[in-house]
Length: 408
Image (cartoon, rainbow, N blue to C red; front, side):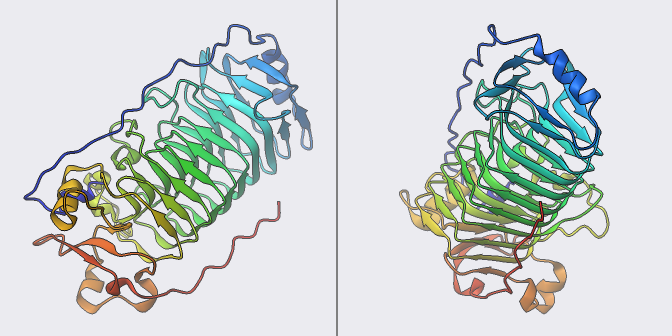
């Protein structure tokens, strides 16, 4: 997001980024190299209803694993007791790829240091990821795999009690899917801690997102087969997401400002409430459109909803943050509006409005409502681009969304 470029074009200021030092990875010299053949055969021979039990231990896996059978459970003995390390992976784009398999459960193990994505699940229904840790043990690095826990194009997805560390895109990512619960997880030192993208009906709650570049993202991207809408983000702890962005240039997350708590981009019907947000140095909540994002250089297809609508932010607790935003122009706006030691408001909106609404006004059920903070936004972003702080303009409410219910 290059929201800052809209704020005060005539001003410049310092842009500071917290540099995350890359650490040595895990020493795998003593890991078991023999078990991998047994595990590969178990996956190849799996039948519906099988439970593949992986014993306690540290196992080195040199090739990507795959599964295509319905109704299989993969179970370890704990995310710190059963470790599948791909530190010497020579083949495969993922650690474990599960494709076209319904009623799949994976639980109680760790997947470390994969070449690409750690756990990718595609085209499945009734997917449970529970107690799984995915991690790149060398710390934040652009060379790390893109996604940690990565269900895509799936239906009925539950991710709970899991951990994602060090992904160069998103630690926990659910894309192009529907009916989703992401709860009680920890996402740390990823570019995006938790991301819901082009998906429908998602509840994200009880999670800890810290030390990422952006804590929790709700995106809609063009050029994907389906749009998304309808996410609740609530009861999460989202703090100190100030790690310098280490995403690959050109990816959407590479433009997320370090110090972002929760970011909504071009998505509709999103409700953010009862979260505890602390010390996210750019802003606790950013609401933006496709037009202020770097990827807007791509030509959006006809009908793509560029503007976030029906966004409701309320009853969150804010502490600190906003004192050292990650973009020069946001720094300039901060100083110009609040003084050298001032802070930006907890919520930033880029100010872009659908042309129909700019002329006729927002329909009541499509407004951006913020009940718990002032909002910094750009008045007339295509014209004079005047940064403005207001609360009264966002004093409205929307109909609460129904909880997501999964029978898993």
